[in-house]
Length: 334
Image (cartoon, rainbow, N blue to C red; front, side, top):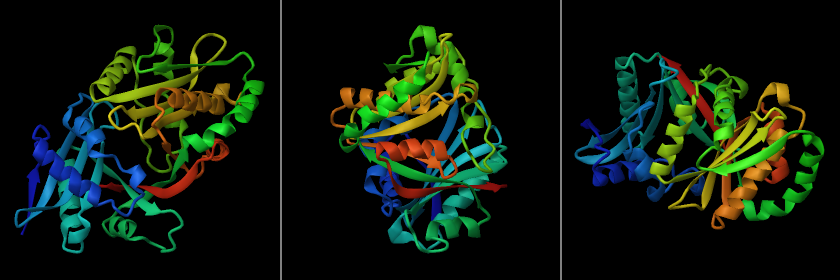
């Protein structure tokens, strides 16, 4: 009989057991896209005030066979829950995934949430009309609300491409400029940096997800910076600065200092009223140069973009990014 048990994230052994099942359940994905234990245990075990994170496992006769993650935003999108639903590959087709999903939905309803959002990963170029994980989600009432491509670039192979691209960007910058910092936004930019971040969700293609923007005050920006430092995450931010000195575009990278081999793009965005100056390309190139200088052991940068985001996809293609898998953002109205 299957049994649900909460994970005490302060108990390293419990958390490691849950993580091992969570990771094994994704062995069909490219290994470079999966976080290591060394990079994961501190974020998973460190509470944050803006999200209520809960982990639980499904046990079969005492053996951990499934892993569930439920993340409830507390400051924005208060009708939404974010979820991971994982069944160990050695225990599939035994009702484990269904048990995880049922518990996710039960907890979401109890928290007053109206929608569950989860991600399904499909191998690039998959020939099946409906791959297994997508079929599982659709059969249980989930709809594909947005399609993205997960991509990665080999930074060493990409670096020779940068000078020519930098020339293109410089020719279009005009009176704009790019500044880059690590971990702590300079005081002269922090307010307008928060204002720009507060417009991200409405500016990026998100299909049918209809997620709300989050307000980023100076205090919230500083709190997020502090938490990233606390969990061992280095932040490299590159911002496009308008002639009036405000932030009007940005690109961010996140790197785990204990395992810096793979970096992740957080967001790349340019405010609509300032487009046409190659600011997306300029900030992204500056960001990658800063990464190369600070973390010589970093070999891959990973990002994902909606398939309809032609401008961002063109920048990534020019820098040498290649599609590794498809990311389907699925949702269900409870």
